Amino acid sequence: MKLYTVKQLSDLAEVSVRTLHHYDEIGVLKPSKVGANNYRYYDDAALLRLQQILFYREIGLELMQIKEILDSANFDLVAALRSHRTVLQEKINRLNNLVSTVDSTIMHLAGEMNMKKKRLFEAFSEEKQKQYEREARLQWGPDTVNQSIKLWNSYSDAQKKAIMEEGGQIYNDLTDALEAGKAPQSPEVQDILQRWHEHLRYFYEPTLEVLRGLGQGYNSDPGFIETFTKFHPDLPQYLEDSITQYVDDLETAEIERMLAEDQHKRLQG
Image (spheres, one colour):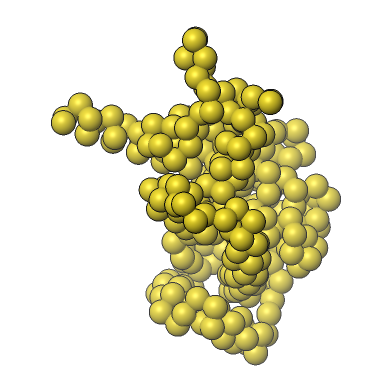
């Protein structure tokens, strides 16, 4: 029977060691064996359980809800996997629609802008814009879309121009970083991603899920690939890698905050 250390499992599942420690602490994923040196070891059954945890987390369940499901006497792994596949495919479709709608709307609002390298944004007709808005309303509800449009319309023409110039500069800076050989996880690139995150708030409040979806969409949607490869052939992949690192760091920080809160509550108790 093969056993995996915490670090090996962390690398295999692409989750942090701290996350696995947290799962152990709350009982959602206990190690299969604890050595005399107090090292945690995980077997193949633990790997399958971790896969289920990550699937259920992906569709928005809380950890204690997941623990209750997995510990249920009638839990069926194969049936769960089939259900996950259906839900995840639906989620992929929704995220792709959201990414396409949001960025196409931003491109439309930007108009044709001359930037220091090439045009990042292309103009869209009013008819096309109305189509995007209809799709967004159907997918995400009228309130969310109306709030985003209302927010944009609250800006003056000068503010709109400045916002779009700022967005263009962010993508130019990312292209410069790519050409300079900066790694996606480098502090310089991650600082630019923080600016990108703040910039999106001019249009809507992006969740971590949406941020990750944007990164994936930039490297999978044909329209985005065509746009970004005008800057550099490797930019779509570079954007996805950089944004993935950025979101992973935010998630790690959130877990650390939760652990600190739990520790504080235990000390207070």
